[in-house]
Amino acid sequence: MNIHHRLLPLFLICASALVPQPSVFAQGALTPPGIPAPIFKTLSQVEPRFPISDFGTNLTVSGSYYLVANLFSGTNTADAINIRTNMHDMTIDLNGFSIISTNPPGSDSPVGIRISEATNIVIRNGQFSGFDRAVRAEGKFFGIVVDNIHSQYCHRAGIEANGVGGNPIQTITVRNCVVDKVDATGESANVSADGIVLLNCTAMVDNCVVRDIIPAGSGLGSCINVATCTNTFINNNFLSQAPVGLNSSGTGTRFYFRDNLTSGCGTPFSTAGGVDRGGNF
Image (cartoon, rainbow, N blue to C red):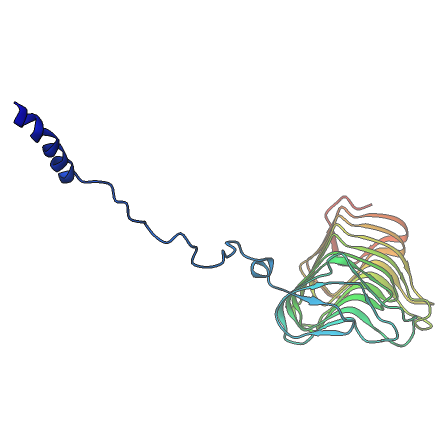
């Protein structure tokens, strides 16, 4: 019996050596492999944009642009921003800033943003003051959108689309805009003034306010002037203080207007060739 008691501890030690034990070795390096990197995209990666800070900027690359400050003309009689022929796919966000011309009315015809035969251009979110025209699309443009723009104290028009006669491709949408005071006095002896001009194009004007239109001499004046436009809709606008509220002329077809209110206009509606869809007063 004494032998058995002496052998028992030895047996237990040997048996424990045969039982698998948890590993005591490290499972990997504890030191990070490098500096932690951000896991989210930056704003420039989500929406790459290019700043505009200079009056007289010419845009020659497609993409998204934004103002970083107010732009002033000083003694510059040029356009503030130019979008050249054959450019396409651009958005200009005024970012709440203003583009301002301090030149008096006269022979010069500066424009806030001039769009020359370009495609898919969006202008939005800011103010213009003092130009002959705040925004002008000209030539064979297509897919122009002017949204949430405030134009004031221009001399010939707030927003103008001037397409090529006989070419139906020109399209423009103007929405949620305010045009305050287009005054042609001092431009020349007899000069017309319009809040929004649509010439030789297909257009939509919706939910805009246009007021205080003053032509010079025997020039004509209207809040919205539609001339030779096709498939065009003028809806839900507020027009006041002008010789004519809504004016249409020319040989365009399928021009419709609805729910437009006028006040203080000598002739509220002069809409030859247009179709009144109701709600116009």
